[in-house]
Image 1: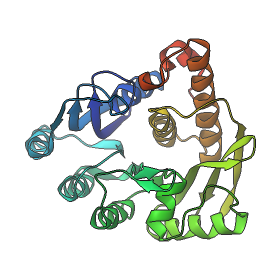
Image 2: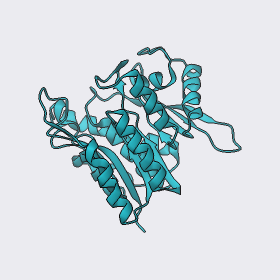
Image 3: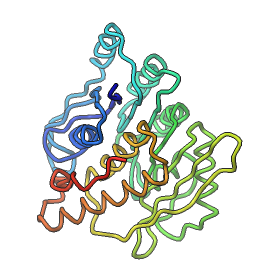
Image 4: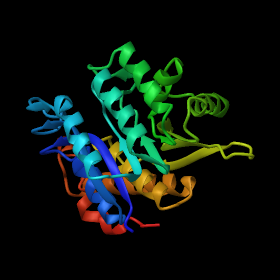
Length: 278
């Protein structure tokens, strides 16, 4: 049977990010994406104005109906969560809808460039840490990895042993597969991959790719959706990270070539055919 991933994230009507990026990529990868919205935006928050409808009060009734029809999932993927209550709902969802072989992928969206997003407090960061404990895979950027492990942030100058210690600390929280994304290394952007397997020594190392251009909204969602779909399809983690990194670079390059405004995310639709399915 076709595999299913419950996607817990927000929906933006314009400006490619979150659900509008994740669902088409999952579909292309042969996976059924089942959306559980956390909030609905008229457009992404890169624009100066937007309408937002917080969906928290409706999430539990939505989930109850999934339970009534007996749904289970091969994967559960979470993105930005804006309150302690939402995190609590998601933790219960993972407990109630997971089978023994369900893979949980948490993208702990908290901040970037050393700063937390405006909605995030110390309490919310701690609660997100408890959600990370339920994950099999996490995809924090450098800022998020630092906050989750109480490490001081620095933009550059990271030594391999420092990243190894941070990734090992993240894995000790629960997930066996960790990728710390967006580490600047001169002309490269690096991802630090850490994998633990029972009875084996942990495997860790860099996957680097040449910079292609400025960061854009939605690239983290592109990356995480490839990681999630590959995980339930049995693709080795390091190969999946390499694939996701390469495709994000192609998306950014396409943005430059097509002169796509930064607010509009990346035109992944134009090059989706270049994404390998396995």
